[in-house]
Image (cartoon, rainbow, N blue to C red; front, top):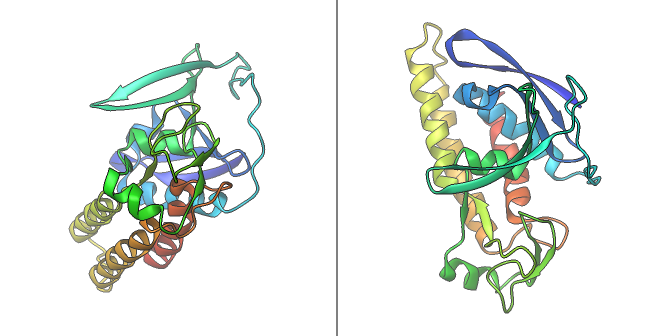
Length: 226
């Protein structure tokens, strides 16, 4: 596990445990709900760096890092968005895959039929974001094993997070005069990168569109937050 010290609401500092190899993150309690906008972007950066690396399988039996109790698979829903995670029955926290965290924060959306047709021009087989199976999109628009639709990071939601961070920075006493320009550049770079992603750039049987999007967006975030 890799520890990340991230900013929380009301001036708090939250320490998040991230596993780059298995693409999961551990949140004590409900820390994922208390991350400041800048912290979400920094977590994106860390996830993006991990997304391009080699994966290891997650153990079938997952245990709480605080009490060693077996974690329980849990299905939840925020508004109309379903997602799953593994929780400690003693209330110590939650173990979430990158995609599950992103779905819970509305950073992932399903592709429309038109977008799937466009994707087929440059890609044939991609990895399912839900179960990891290879999905032949030349004839299907959902995973044949778990029936999950093809999903992608939502560039609009990412741009909104950048805008929220811009607004928060504008209210601070120590305003970086270059921030608005860098934020606008990041927004444009995000839109351009995800236009390429929807055409199949980065999609493969080894990487799904969410992982590919994380890798692309990590570079944007690195330049934005440096």
